[in-house]
Amino acid sequence: MNKSTVGRKTSGLDKVLRVALYTVLTIVAAFYLIPFIVMLITSLKDVEEIRTGTLLSLPASLHFDSWVKAWSSACTGSSCGGISPYFMNSFQIVIPAVLISTLLGAINGYVISLWKFRGSDLFFALLLLGCFVPFQVILLPMARTLGWLGIANTTSGLVFVHVVYGVAFTTLFFRNFYQSIPNELVKAARLDGAGFFTIFYRIILPVSTPIIVVTVIWQFTQIWNDFLFGVAFSGFDTQPVTVALNNLVNTSFGGKEYNVDMAAAIIAALPTLAVYVFAGKYFVRGLTAGAVKG
Amino acid sequence: MNTKAANSGSGQTQSGRPARLSLADWMPKIVMAPTVIVTLVCIYGYMIWTAVLSFTNSRMLPSYDFVGFDQYERLFNNDRWMVALTNLGVFGGMFIAICLFLGVTLAIFLDQKIRAEGALRTIYLYPMAISFIVTGTAWKWLLNPTNGLEKMMVNLGFEDFTFNWLADPDMVIYCLVIAAVWQASGFVMALFLAGLRGVDGDLIKAAHLDGASIFTTYRRIILPSLKPVFFSAMVILSHIAIKSFDLVAALTNGGPGYSSDLPANFMYAHTFTRSQVGLGSASAMIMLGCVLAILVPYLYSELRGERHE
Image (cartoon, rainbow over all chains, first blue to last red; front, side):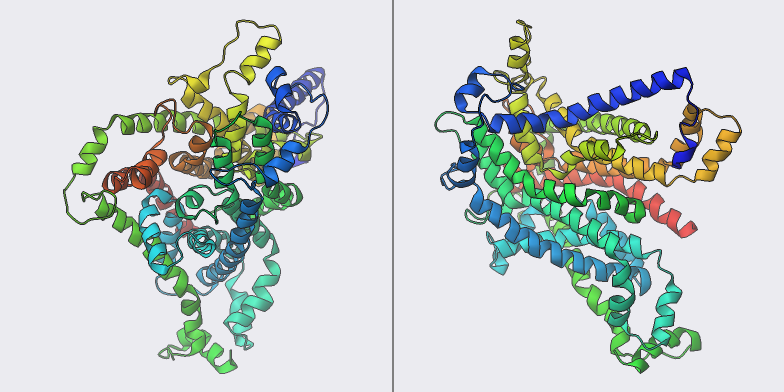
C-alpha cells in the first residue's frame, strides 16, 4: 500500500496509538526471537549450569565444547561421529536437486506460458493439483520404484525424489512469472529467426533473475528442511542432517546433553538461516513480483 | 534452430497450412515430456497405486488380494486413528485460525510506516526458514516440564507454577499448535504484506478524500480486496497442517502414548514400521481426500477466474 497515504495526521491520539503499535510489535518480535536465543545460550552452557540455571539465564562462561561435540563426536543412533557427515550429505542432496528442479521449472514455465500446445493448460492444472498432494499417498510406491531403479538408500535416490516433487512448484513459480511476458515478444523473435532455445536464452533468461532467486531460495529451504523423504528413503550413510538431528536428540544413553542438542539444532538450521538472512529480501520482493499470484 | 523451421512454426496458424513436423515445432513438447511423464507416473500413477493398495490386505509387502473396504473399516474402528484425526481437526483449526489472525494483524501493523520495518519483518519471518525438526527440538526444550518454562517461572518466585503440557495427553496437542504457529505465522504475514503493497494506491487515496478513517479503509476497502491472498494462505496452511509429520516426530513423537499423533504420523508408522501397508494406504487416501476437499473448489475458482480475465 502506498506509504504516503497512511499515518499522515499526528494528533495526540495518534501518538498514543503509535506507542502502542511499537509496543505490540516489539512483544511479538520477542516471541519470535526467544526460542532462538534460548537455543543459543543453552548451547553455550555446560551441563551442570543447565541443570541449576534457568532458560534465560546467561552462561557464566562460554563453553564451545558442545558445538565441537555436536559437530564431530555426538552419537546419532548407533554411530558417534557427530552430525558433520550428515550435514555434508544434505549439501550433496540439496545442490543438484535445486539446480535440476529450477532449470526444469524454468523451461516448463516458458513452454506453458509462451509455447502453449494442445493439452498444456490441462497439464498445468494437473501439475498445480500435484503441488498439494500429501506425500503420504506416494510414499510407498516411490519406495518400491527407488528399489527397482537401484537407487534406494542412495543420495541420487533422494535427489531424484526431490526433483520429481519439486518440479511442480518450480514450474508454477516460473509459469506465473512468465505469464506477464507479452506473447508478441516471442512472435517477433521467431520472425527474426530465433528458435526455441535462442529465445529462452537471449530473451527470457535475462529477465528471470527475480523468479530464479525466489525459486532457488524456496527449493533450497524445502529440500534442506525435508524430513519425510529423508527418513523414508535414505540409507544409514546417506541420511540428511534433519534425520541425524532427530536421531541425536532421541538417542538416549548417558545423561541428556541439552547443550549438544541445541548446538546440533543450530548447526542444522544455519544454511537456511544464512540463505534467508542474505537473500530474504529478494524472496519477499519476488513474492510481490508475482510468485504467489496464481 | 534454423530459420525456416522457426518461421514455419509461427506461420502455420496464420496461413492455415498443415503443420510441418519440424524439430522446432516439437521442441516445446520434447522439453516438457520428462516432466509430463514423471508427473503422470509419480504423482497420479502412484496415487492410483496407493488407492489400489488400500483395498487389499497388504501387510509387510504389497499384495493384491482385494478385500473391499475392510481396511477403511478397520481404520475407523482404530482408536489411534480416531485420535489422530481428531488431533488434526484441533491442530489444523487452531493453527490456521491463529496464523491467519497473526499474519493479517502483523501485516497491517507493519504497513503503518514503521521505522524498523525491515528488521521486524526479518525477525517475524526467520522461523519459516528453519526445519520443523529444529523447531520441534527447540520447543521440546522450552516446554520441557522439568527444565523449561516451568522451572524458569518457579525460579522467578512463582513456586506453584506448573507447565507440563508436553506430558499431559489432553494438552500436548496445544504444544504442537504453539510451535507450528511460531514457525509459519511470519510467512502468512509476508504473504499479506505483499498483498497490501499491491493494493491500488488511488483507491486508498479516494477513500481518504471521502473522509474514511484508516480503520474503515482497511475494513471496507483493503481487506476485501485481499480475498485471493486469504484463500492462498488458507490453502497453504491447511496443506501444511494435513501433511505435518516432522513437527510431531521431533516435538512429541506422538506421545504421551499416541495422544499427539497426526494422520501423517499414523500413516508412516503403520506403513513403514508396523507392516500394515493396506491400513497405511487407506489412511493416506483419507488424507488425500481431506486435501482435495479443500483444494478442488479453490483451484476451480482460481482457474476459472483466470479465464475470465
